[in-house]
Length: 303
Image (cartoon, rainbow, N blue to C red; front, side, top):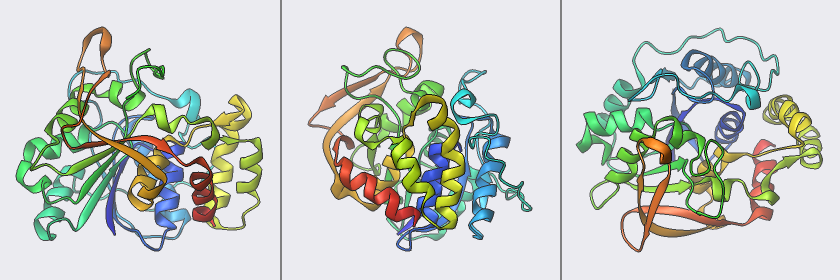
């Protein structure tokens, strides 16, 4: 399966990237970066670091440096470390990002691809995806599916930025609303893993599971071990939020989903809050996950 990874690395983005690059069934055609957990330059550097650490030659393209509307987006370096990768001290990359922008690359790639040949996994704010949809609404329909980590779909669960909102959707709520609001008959189906499922207590990396990861002798596991130590030692556990979006692509059988239409409040006190209408639309919300299978997929994938 061909996939483009749109991300803001970030430790959980980084682990998702390692799992994708380490999966023989996944062909990562390109990585696009977006402002989110860290600024665009730092996130792009992190993507290049990880690609080189696994001796891969996947091209990296820089996307949006800020949300579609507004300035001063939130950052998450208090969780991910100053470098965004748990202050793991990974070598600086020898390569640079491609000169073509992320959206220009996607336009060119979709023009030359067959319909439903490529899927998109977006684990950062949806700024790049919304820009592509606005610029080339016909071309984006050629995507097979779009997999998103973002949002909060259970009102009983509290957000991680405000009471109502998850980080990615809060960071660029306008783009999140544009993308999920477009999902319909002629738009690619969207599978969304929100904070209510990605925060499942049985899927976290804690001291025990970190020891298991650190005991695996593979390049991917060694890198994951280095990055995960900081948040686990600081907070006692770490959520692999973005891995859920990747597994929704590669292992959909571990999820129970519900088809809905979703809109996202673009501004105001409820910025980033999702309004969900069941039974219509083309957004497939991940409602439940099998934690035993999820955890095993992480360990097997890092091997």
